[in-house]
Image (cartoon, rainbow, N blue to C red; front, side, top):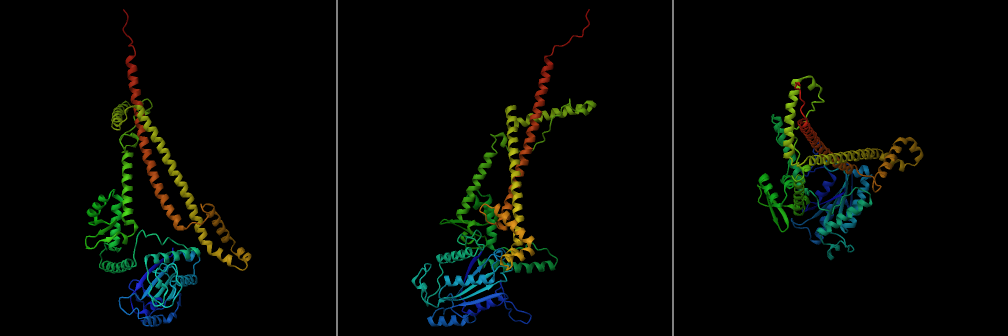
Length: 535
């Protein structure tokens, strides 16, 4: 997942860029770190090369060139362009990326995209902010030193002439991103689509502002804890972080733009403006609106209007689903309906007249409750009640089968995760086996690990749609989706099961009522026997 960052610098101190590449710096405060003696600390594991200049004389040579062409003499001119290629931390373990390979990529990238410029190419292998990823710093003088052939990505005729400055446009930036993607794909490194807009757009300025805010908050919380107080807030949020959270919460519930505006204003006191096809947001303590473009594509007009429409459709479907016209779909609320007891089968009632009398009273109450239940739920006939019960039985069975199918999918996915872990843990050994001079001897010494690697590769490719090995990130994301789906499916199954049992109880009670009425009618029609003595 190599990403490209760009920072334009107006500082006339070219040596500061070289010092940053060579010496340890506080990434938040941008100040050099000092050892116990107050000296600057050299970075470890770095590779530094220069293009069209000596790397250690980068500052001097840039100043000489600027003076030659009388450029970069004013304080507000852009003197340098700093590009950062940051590789995925997994590239080191999964793809075998080395510092030397990253440095070669950086050199190739500069020669292809910044021809004629004085440039420093420096690879840091110690990670950035503790991430452990390899990254390449590219610092170029904004003034071009040499004439170069015209390239397709150059928009102006002067973009290939010496003495003219580097001009970064949107199209040029897209070319730079595409160039990096092509190199990463060629080298079989992890890569995302850099040309697609970011879902959550966090600029470098916002990132470092959040880091500084977190440091200050941690210091304040440490003082509170030392005084015996419990901090109310442990995570620092920028204004944009708070705005993103508020928009996300309101957008989940809103079914129209008007409702969205009302929710944001009542819940967070945030105003929304729809102007020229774009949303912008005004926080209560600000005078200037924050554009949706600065927040990410999840907060722009097109995405949110689509989400509102989807919410409205979902709400309409749910309303139709629970329409009273369909007794099966009436929102189920569990009642206290209980089964009528059959006195003929009740042993305890036969043994105790008092208990039998109590059961008779309870049966009368349950029969009355059953009649009320049937009337309240709109069942016009006994056949309607049985039909509703049978339909619920089918839905209950379908819901159970769906949940069981998801269980099976989850089991297969867990097996994939197991074999992927086995593959990753033995990949290094197999790579050494491929590079070994005596492969037969190496295989005999590492037979178990190589066999486990080959078993994992065979399983993963056999169970992949395109024959490739999946990433752990994708498998875990798929597992999260399956777990959420399984939870919802079992809730649906439980819902239908409880509803079915209640209708089953109602059906049995109605059977008892009809049987009782039939018995009473039958006894009334029987002729009375005469026990009078004949005279």
